[in-house]
Image 1 (cartoon, one colour):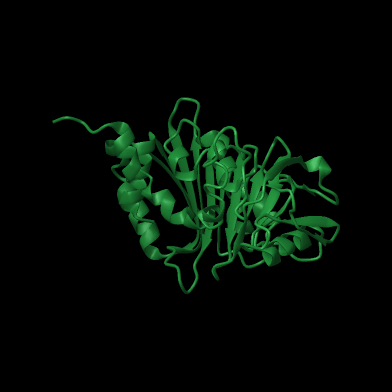
Image 2 (spheres, rainbow, N blue to C red):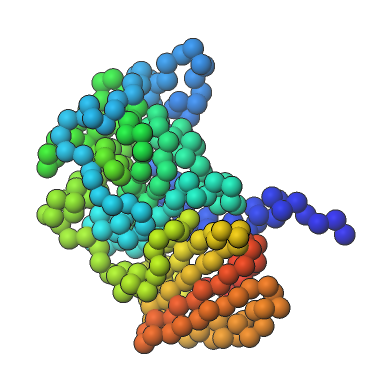
Length: 305
């Protein structure tokens, strides 16, 4: 029997990641196509039809965001309380992996958000009421925006209206840049300035994680509208130097079925080419599985947790 092309097979294996990150694309629909439909001889235009200019961050007046941004913990430190789920992606690390087509590479992010510069890291927080925001690392420290961009001063920062009133999408420049509805963006500034408390409810599970070097990280908590298999869980994915992948999942107060499935499938995991490492500490269960990407995905689907 002819084997399927690995690239084709990988499309199926990516479904597990898509479900967790759909909210990350909420803002992209407002920007896609704003700069990639232009002819080379034409100046790019904004959603409102105005010409875009590229502005170095240094030319934007006021304070700029300056915060560590190398893991999901850094994003949560900037997030107002109440985060129901969050995702962090290192877009540079996705390149050459099956996850690149899921999250979009840094050039795709540039086009989607009309930044005029590549995005290398991305964080999105969701508040379960159709609100949220994103953080974007832009090493080139520049941004494309309409010449007549409106700005709202707030706590010493300039909140830039990315669509000049067409949509409620605003930016604050810095490292990382903030993008989202103006009230949420203002809330992030409040956290940065110490005027509002950041979300800390995931600290317990994050304390059990190795947060550095991940391609992808997520945290989720159980809500009335979610079917999470635990009160909270953290998951990450890393690619090792030998090309294999390691997925770590940490459950806080997992449902009984979680530990039951882990015990059952750990018994003959080696027959499926997957290595298990399981530890429990009080009300936390930590599961680490490693293999090639396809096998790691298949094992996650087999566990269905």
